[in-house]
Image: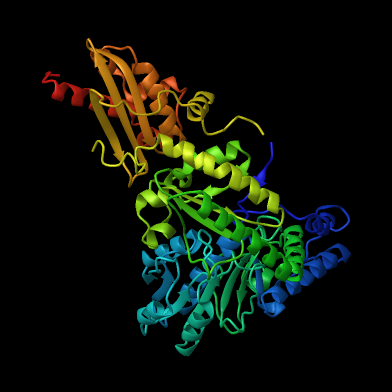
Length: 393
Length: 131
């Protein structure tokens, strides 16, 4: 059966070029510990340094401002916990948004239970944070603002530059979780007024278990771990050299191909959006259509539930994800969709499809052929179908 | 691709893929509905009763694959049963007949038997039968 992978915001396959770059560092030829003084160690250190330059280049940072981590979650934790611990004498108020990834949201909530005050700014029905809301939330106690660059569920691009400008004027540290934008949007930490930025390798065709936190020179941060001098003591532990090398190569390729690849994916995305909106009734595009990353589509199908839709798509070889409670392991549907004011029943019927480099126009044609039939089949079973509404209550 | 789904039993997948007794009964003798759109699962069961026996039964479900499969299984189990027998079918019986459901699905997605009990109650109320 045809297989169409439409979950690139969840993870991506390691590119052959990336794998090739990594392999020597897993094998006898270059397995060394970068802290060792002999040739094996020096070779590994050189590779880690070169990768750092590549990652830094992709976001307009200096190499010495990049701190490797085990991925996006650790980088988000390091940013929030690290700044909270380092600056708590100055103030104990943190601002973030209601639609952050759980790596930020849950960390902020943890800090909220441990002596910090946290404000979660709302979003518009289109899934956008408003600069005015952030501005209003600022107090004399505010030490950190953390707002994601691109939302992972609905793909909305947040006004990072403006929020960064605001933070800078008020002397507040500004962090952005850019896991879903690195490699997809041009990023320059100077232009965006960002002090801390989270990036992840496996969203850009690098290996899992690899990411980084950019920390602007001069910003203090307390480490999460203690143990060694790696990453200038901010992230002790022997470097995951193969994963770091892979991250570096992936970042390099993403930078080289971004313009053309994002243009290609934007066209596919628009074809998918327009195709579904014209073929299926009672469907909405969740998230702003203009302020949207080129790779994200998120539909809300009325009258049906996301998990049964995903499973039906899976049986046709289409891999997607949902904001349905049934797929999250919790009883509540996506906090992002709820924060946008989408009713529970609509949030349960949401499906996210995220495009990537393996997708072709034929993939989109296939989805447009299969999806309407599935939706129709499930709606025929649903007591919420509009023809049936109000029958037995 | 493998037909195996490591979350659901083969029976669940069978009933999800080809559910039995989907639809409505026009002028049903009893209708019962359980669940809410807020929690993401609603099951509505329609019954036609003749001589105290469930002659026909149909369902409509908004919910995940487990909710759809358990509705389908329930209708199979209840068809032809007396009302007394049908009232003894529990949600747990339906789950067992499906070779089990994942623990997180037991509560929210396994509502069909409860919907049937409500349909029977509806029938009894309409016909002034004391249960």
